[in-house]
Image (cartoon, rainbow, N blue to C red; front, side, top):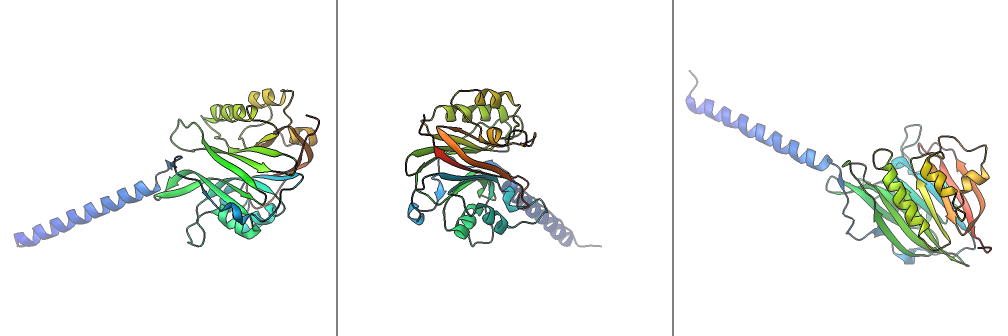
Amino acid sequence: MTPTSTVSTKRWKGVALGLALALIGLIVWDGADRRAADATQPLVQSLQASVKHESPDNLKLASFNIHGGKGSDGVRSLTRTAELLADSDFAGLYEVKAMSDGAVPNQAVALARTGDAGWLFAATERRWWSDHFGNGLIYRIPVRSILRVPLVNTRGKAYRNAIFSTVELQRATVRIVAVHIDRENDRRQQLQSVIELFLGLQKPCLLMGDLNTIATDPLLEDLVAKHDVRSPLQESLEGHLPSQNIDWIFTRGLRTVSVKLVENTASDHPLLKAELAPDVTE
């Protein structure tokens, strides 16, 4: 017969093991859960002094959903992303992730260091008790100010924000809204809010990003119908613009020098590049 004390000891060991496993499970669940980043915290960015370049005459712009550095071939490599952005004065980046190797805190920093640029990371969500995912900027020209604009979220996931920046050219101060819009329930309301922000800005200004919507969206059709709004992609690539394109630039008070969608293996999105100049006729 097994002594009562031995049975009790085994039972309590089983209870303790069960409680320990439950506690570990709760910790893992809590860390893995996606939560909105705290928009009241200061933005994480490099010092302005790190930007060594002077204001250019024209703005060489990039807008890129980098897909966390994971390419269409399944390979994760920021080297390819950095090469695509090498000649840009100012780049808006979406689906930027934190990094866990300890060398740099997030992918915006890694890309900026590769290209000797300033950087910003505007987190949209937290996981593992730290800022984990969001939008970013890298820039090689003077940036006067940067503001994070949280966007509505009703479904508890896929948190979003817009980054509002002002950059200095030789002949003008340009106001830029860079954004990644939700592709589900909140898409229309988020898009409407950033369009209203864009239309309310002093010229010259532009709206760019992964808007997760195509040219036939009524909101975009209404936008390009306005007399002072230009759509460089639609104007320059008429007849050659992919019907399912969801990456856009819209401008007011700016003239398009060049624009192109660059297919690549660094992401699951094309790179949107443009050179813009202040429109002296407006």
